[in-house]
Length: 258
Image (cartoon, rainbow, N blue to C red; front, side, top):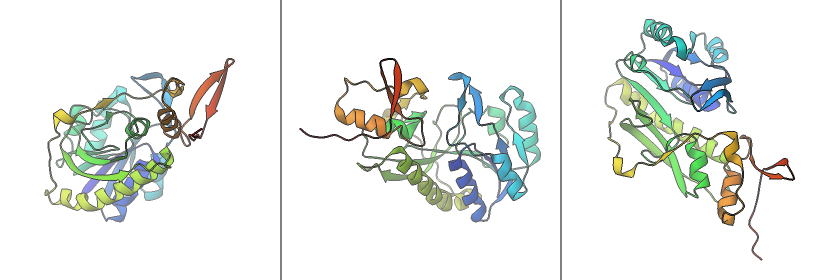
């Protein structure tokens, strides 16, 4: 099975490495710069977990195609010329147009860091931790027209420990991705992968987050404040407060009973 890979993060690169180690042929990958423009952030988003897929392409001697959302026809044409059987999207930020979704006969699959249909949308790990969830997970699913709406192939759940930070959840997500890719890519190759409809009655949707969303509201309950801080600590920019006009970043917090 020949795979074209679309990613822009360290998580995405580790997923591509897993596919390579499983013996699948990566016929090409997509490239997008570290700072990119997107609808919810017209001034640009700085990808904190960025990985340069152009460098990965040089390392593995595979074609790398620069993604240009303003010239998608050219991108589609170049991907199509590589004749992939499957397209994998992991750690990517743009919606995929219909033309691109129709290139690969086995479809386009994505990896989303929640147990779909819960936490569709942006920053699902951050939102899950802010909301005090005790567990979350990773979903492998077919990408369709909507945001995270396609049929589910498989899921891997993991605990959000009381002492975990967002960095710990990122590590757990990478481990879950390895499990899902090892289990389901061989089934994709033989057209035996599951297709499970998402239950619309269970849907929750969360928006993308921007830097201003990191400000702490001190009227919240102590546990929510602590969750808010640990959800945005390293490698993310950190939760913050403003004191006498000065922005103060808070990297860690605990609750002390008096």
